[in-house]
Amino acid sequence: MPKTATTKEKAMVLGVAVLIGSLGFMIQFVGSIRLGTDIIHVACVGDSITDGSGYPSNLQAMLGNAYFVGNFGVTGSTVSSDSKTPYTNQSAFLRGKSFQPSIVIIMLGTNDAAESLNSSTADFTTDYRNLVKEYQSLESNPEIWLANPPPLFENNLNLSNTNLLRNIIPCIEHVAVELDLQVIDVNAALDDYPEYFGDGVHPNTEGATLIARTICQTVASKETQRNDNI
Image (cartoon, rainbow, N blue to C red; front, top):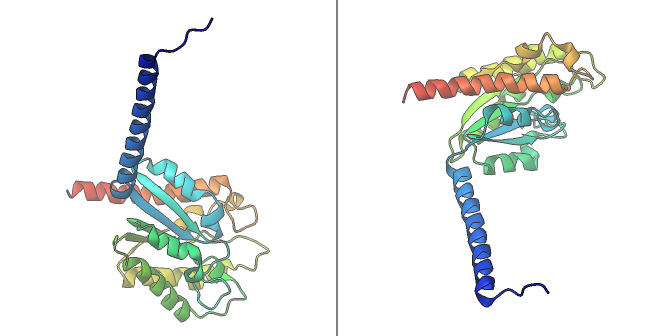
């Protein structure tokens, strides 16, 4: 016959279960505190290249557990307020600000290079400046880096590399100088790798990895400088 547990044994089992449950709660609670105070929140702002390429996940793996990388990319979004999908009209824009990031990486402008988009460079510059200032006004006072979008190769998506190089990137760099912000030159990093873009616009796995590595190097370099100054 199976042995029947005594009252004392049942009490011991119950005590162990309660202890395990308490420890689990404590670990979760401590973890939530760490996430809110110690972890460096990095908000990746962008279009489909951010949303779907996987570069934010790669960046998370490269930066490690001291960082929490959030993907706030929106496919088809633009800087321009004159398009059908301005980034500032998207829910990801609000979620990114609620994320209270310590670092914001803005990589937008690819869709603004569309041949059909009639927004002037002056309008683009104004909209881009206003976008940046939205993040500058956050209580978390994030460090903001502007990333030049990847190059555009031959494609069927009505996106012009000429527009990107002559109009969009100069405006981004103008805003960077005006607001004393650093530019991460993703464009130059991928310029020699057309094979990383299956449709001429969206990076494949290798392209996403290279984007993440380029950004990671900038983040790591800045953290090294900050630690040296402490």
